[in-house]
Image 1: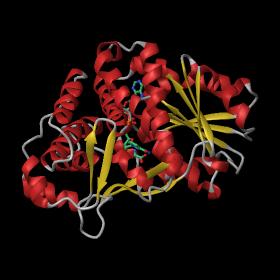
Image 2: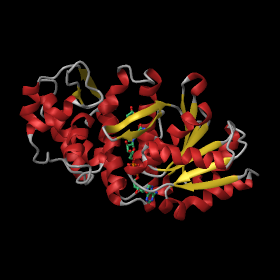
Image 3: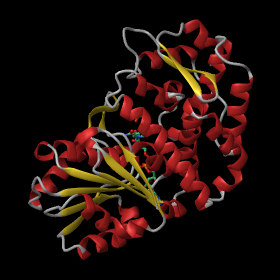
Image 4: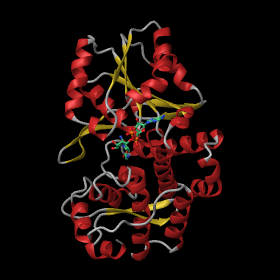
Length: 356
Ligand code: NAD
Ligand code: GLY
């Protein structure tokens, strides 16, 4: 098992990465916190595959443990769902020493983290991420929240988990499309801060697609380590943490303008990263080699790279509505070379129009 520490003073925690860890979640939790009771929150489909194993180990510790199911999909990241969860936690008499376990992907992690941040002014929660995206991104760093009809992730809190338990074997049951979407975020880490990691991905993409556990363990740990360093430096995203948004500026616009149905998040990020690299090249920040290598790697990993046909005016409009847009300036994360990037505070519309 790999252990990775996230150093955030009194909010520090560890990420445990390995095989079969879902069966030891209770033991791992006991080592960091003694709960009055435990509530696992998950989707029905994940409950049917992994719920029994997670609950068994919590019961073995002598804790009263319940499982609450919430429907799958982005629709569950809502204030209505949050309220339903508060109701259930109150019915179960959960107190300030109760612990929530988020068993699922980013939807469950973001929702449960927000409930934990706000129930009785904040209770302990741990993450047991089961999608690749949640294992390398959403379970780490403490962004929690839900959507508002006017925009994704508009309501939320920075609230760190007490522990992250990543079981590589859960990826075996993950649909391939979801798996590939997680790979897009892993490629992002190479681009933003680690050229040798990017080269590793280029050389080993077949093992990665074949779910080789040694390879997976390395790429997940390295991705989390890169994210941890960024979060340690700028937990509340005053500036530096924005680098994690490489490819997301256009990615969010693509997701929203295609109705959140044609591409899942990681796929839109893949397209957004290639466009951001093209923009970097056309603005003279990097050589042509950068977008070329990025596109080739993403294609090898089975991710889409072509910009869909969208009305350019609508794309620009959507960029102005991005959460990162301030003072009516479109901000972009541009790449200088693989492993090195720059936050550019204002990119002219004319430059963006050239690459979409
Ligand atoms: P998801 O949580 O919706 O999971 C995708 C699908 O896979 C779901 O249908 C789920 O039931 C299923 N699933 C999950 N694990 C499975 C497994 N092991 N086997 C079989 N099926 C499984 O999607 P996601 O991509 O993990 O997360 C997306 C969410 O994460 C978005 O809401 C996004 O805003 C959020 N996010 C948050 C952060 C953050 O820093 N907090 C970062 C990135 C994304
Ligand atoms: N997923 C981007 C962040 O955590 O900041």
